[in-house]
Length: 253
Length: 118
Image (cartoon, rainbow over all chains, first blue to last red; front, side):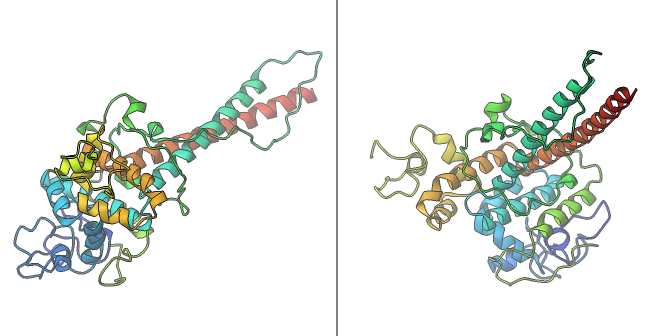
């Protein structure tokens, strides 16, 4: 992936495939010298200067990723979405949109919500384990009467009650500043369990405000590129819906 | 106009046919649900997605689409990926706490053993 904090990370170039992520390079080229961007190539239309997709979908592998985005969201919806986002945030948005689109293609029923539930299940399990261990620790630290020798606790298999069934009310809706680069690979087997979906905001008493998008990216574009690498590379090659097969990618730069 | 139009057909200002693909999942008393989904995915895309799914799975698909759409509306940049990030942070913190508690148990057990041997 191209480094440099000032380059525009291209989903086709940096996250989803090879190609240059630099705005001056081949990645994200608009109609002009470099040919159509991946989106316009897929849509078979002229890539005009100022194409909203051009910075994010390079002409090489970008079209494969745009295929997924178009299939799930539709080009016009994504275009409208990007238009309402400040330019400096659009790269992040494109990466997450690509991720959701690919997740939805791989799992048409649950999409990336399956991943969320798997993670939530993991949180619940870990918290139950911590609770059990903390109560065990508390019992160890309690003073024991002298007449009775303290029981030697043998290592026991952890036992805790199965976590309650999850619903979307258990999901955090309000997201404080977060680092996209911390998103690691999704679990290899996503839990596609039947869940009752309700409004996540009920759990946390309020919708997540736009301030939640105040992301502490820290490294800026380098974190985004790391995210793009993680999210999209971990899902394997471009989605099967890609019209140009499985292009080879050079993920890291 | 059919007074029993589903929320989708009401939103789209069209007749709601008997075999409307949206009607089982978008009751007229919840117009925001379809509005959100339409805004992010578009009615056509959702219809295509649902048509490709077995009937018994469509309800869940609609709910997950609704959730993702709501997340995207509330956070246009990160959508529900932000929630994934938050959960992963929670997992890391809980794993750290778990390791710490296990270490404390090990120390406490050692003290117990020493006390017993005295």
